[in-house]
Length: 158
Image (cartoon, rainbow, N blue to C red):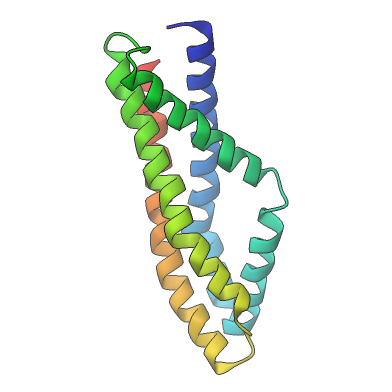
């Protein structure tokens, strides 16, 4: 494995671990805590989280980690990752891209947009929040597990 490939893989491992931790936090206690606040305060708090997170270090890591994992899949497909590491690294990269990035873009982001457009003090807004809690959290569990599995496969590939 070349030094560049090893550095990309290590970056993918570490960023998958960080992202797994972020998503794990939401799955295990943040969403439950927001639910316990009540519909309006919980929805308002999540709206704030969604606004702040896109202006934080989370967003560059979100995109750079996806790019690194996608690059590993492509490099593996081009035969640039040799030996028994290739299938593990490619699988880890693919699981990350699909289970983290695609799920986020197709599932979580539209729910975030819908929540942002809602007025949490209205009955319609409260209904949006109730649906959001269930669907968003379920999708977040997928992201958490995908990041964990991807990280494990990438480590095994090293």
